[in-house]
Amino acid sequence: MNNSLVPDLYGGPTSPTNTTRLTEHKISVFFSIVFMTVGITSNSLAIAILMKAYQRFRKKSKASFLLFASGLVITDLFGHLINGAIAVYIYASDRNWSKFDHADVLCSIFGMCMVFFGLCPLLLGSVMAVERCVGVTEPIFHSTTMTSRHAKIILTFVWLFAILVALLPILTLRSYHIQATKTWCFLKTEQIDTWMDQFHLLLFSSLGFLSLAISFLCNAMTGITLLKSRLKSQQHRQGRSHHIEMIIQLLAIMCVSCICWTPFLFTMANIGLKIYGSQSQETNQTILFALRMATWNQILDPWVYILLRKTVLRKLFRIARRCCGVEFIDLHAWEFSSFKNSLKVATISDSPSCTRTNTFSISQKSDTEQKCELIETK
Image (cartoon, rainbow, N blue to C red):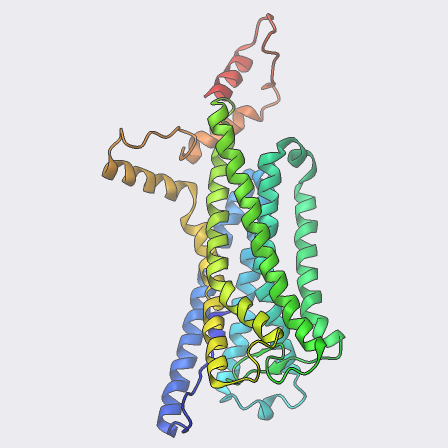
């Protein structure tokens, strides 16, 4: 979803004047263009950062996470581009659907895009959480199973599944409907009288809540595992730095998704269960508020990868140390080590001559092996 989809609601029993309508129309078009531009710019910047990181770590365990993250940001980018362009066109046509969409083709396309680009970030967020959970709790299984090829297959499957859910109303001979504000299309939310319309709303909200629940559980398991590992042993910290970075990003994505999507998912579930009853002005305002909250998700997602990077976190850590004192914060070097040292360690560790040796072996070790063991014990 895109914040350019934020519709207007004209409250009150009386209609606004033509001057007021014209002013509100210009404001709506202006904000639609601004939010679409901000979304495209921020997502493009995040894609550049993630692709650069993927080229650096493409042969390591972080590669699969970066592929999923890139897929999520690319999905958000196309969501801003496609939905934003349709929304601007609707505003430019003065929301007169009968004039430019006689056969409801544009409404169907708009509705499918709303479902697809709304559901994909939630599904991908849960997939990323599961991938990190497996990578931390079962590192050997993850390194042998989760290759870049498998990650691309999973990413494609998520996209196809979201497309199937978006096409489901069309395949079941149900159509998407123009909402009360006449600025966007979605599943039927007014005068629901069949179980199929209820099923579509409940399916969408259930998949969203399930994705959030999976993300929460997997992130909790990952965090607990890392904490136990740190408390249990101070050895083999190599590679744990990027785990911390990815977990911080996942937690931020989960918090953003929960805050932005919970009102909309809860509202759609209530409508599907007929808790709201007949559609009223208050219900329309509730849907409007929930939609506005949900549309911020795709704007905030890319900033998680832009701001919560290791280099940025390292600078924030240094600022915190200056404010709180060096003695007050005593963290290990792996938490916010520089990319230069991380790349140096990765280069030496991945070299063919750098192999693990038996601890109890009394054979003479080469200089390269001693250097590798020294790195692992740091």
